[in-house]
Image (cartoon, rainbow, N blue to C red; front, top):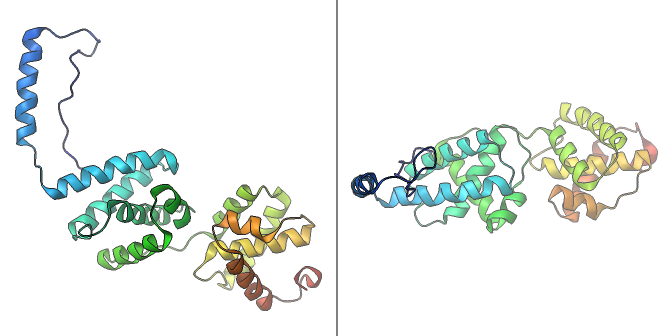
Length: 237
């Protein structure tokens, strides 16, 4: 993360044995001079607070080490562009987490990040766009299959329905129907797969699992059905 190290407060050696008074006194002087020599700029303090929060979010969001390192890198670049001025650390950090997850192929949604950072989803989305423009980043599209798997697992759907949805999603992806809301589109395909397989699930359950509203799910379902052929006329009627 690029932060300076500090001399710890422990008074024991590597084996756990207590240090002598002379050694403790010497280390105390080193610790004092080490602290005086460190930079205490506002930028350094901002990074320290942000990375402390990132370490806390690592467990709550189940972030991999690669995601944490990528997030720290993006945050540092955003901080160099002065994007942290006048904005909360949580909103900037949350947007950086989302960008790193997108770049590394994770299906973690803005809603998940918002729930764990206490920042409104709209604020995270706005901060996300600001960072993309400022750093000129090109973010890959979310893998639709990951969306299918994530939603199906959260909703407790059967493996048969999941495979049916993935086959349908593969066909839809070839025609680029997913649009800018892949989670909502994946939920609509899963709902259709449930109808085909006779698995009972309501739209609210899938919408909650996808992190979208029921209105969004119904709209995407309507768009999807209108673009389909009559391959499954009973399910799509």
